[in-house]
Image (cartoon, each protein chain N blue to C red):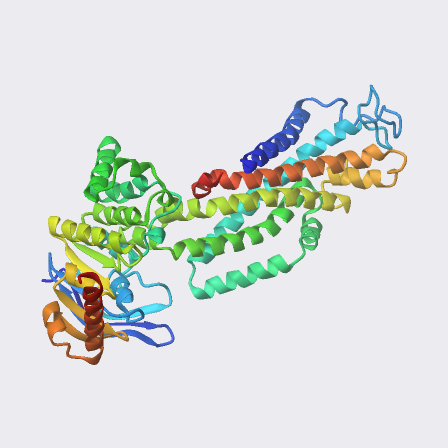
Length: 270
Length: 264
């Protein structure tokens, strides 16, 4: 029952950010490049959350930031799940030599700091939304691959896989019928957590100036820009931080609740 | 020709340690044979080796003919045609032999669909029939493995193995993980179904009393080597080997203890 509450709370928080991101595609209080407001205005009737030091509407920038956060989270998770899932399954099925090689490669990739990897990608491709997604997705793929490998190996050692083989089921069917459903509950929770981490990683990149370049209003960039004026205009620094927390906490709650939905053996404990 | 003929079977690890060696036996169509031995004697490995299912890192040599098809050295593609149709396996631990995230009905339906080409309503009624055959109520089809008892899980696993209508059923300690009272039921069920479908049975166990209930022919394994084989009665009467003697003696002692404690 408690988990049910978590799930609902998670869905509400995530939906809030998703809705803001979707609305920003069609409508924002001001055009993104509008600088007609006064500089560093406080919250008011005209600019609901005030303006930044260039006179841009803060609410508008936050809404566009939600879009970027969702795009980076979804893009990086999709890339990480696809690459990592395939590599993990490959390693689980591979012979010893290939398995050991892949495992060593994954360990090196995981040991490599994500931010450093991201800087390399940005240096090679230039700072853009795509670079951020590729960099974060690659780092995530290594973690997903290692998890998939371990989970898939455990399932492959089970008697029901042997039983499926004795009844003549082909490997591709075994993967879709037995392996994926059995690793999915654990994997989906991990992917949801990774979504939250990806959003945070993008904020860090943007904070360092390696994220999507201006005029893209990523939350990390908003934080960085508001840093110097945090005492005169605190809302500019607090609002992006609050939104980051809302999205990341929401995703984590959602992940926890999802585990129960995806795994029928846990349902009766509810 | 025998349905399953094994000659000179050896299983070894990739660094050369022999786990099973010099094993030969044959199971004719409709025949029954038990492999008996303590844990670690190589009996379960033998059961896996004859279906080409040894875990990675183990290699088999010798000759295994399953319905005329050589198993050792064969590709999975060749074996896929033999498995299920010719031989199916019932495992020791029903909780790992069933996919925990798939409803039992769906698990039983899978081999029925593939081997008998059933679809839709015909498939659904075949699943219910298969459940009925192992004395399980129809509601079990909607249940997940963790929602039924251990005995019921093993019955479902037997229904799955039988769904392909194999000519040979390989039962690897099928009752070891069950309560004693449930053991007898499952054993009787297995015995009845094997007889009803004219199947051959390769039964693997460490328990002489259980073996005596289902088969007449036995091969006694010790440390991966066959130490005695022949009709169960002969082996019991003339245990020709130290290991067999100790096995028989311990079974007798248990019997005697039960008689003293139980009947009087």
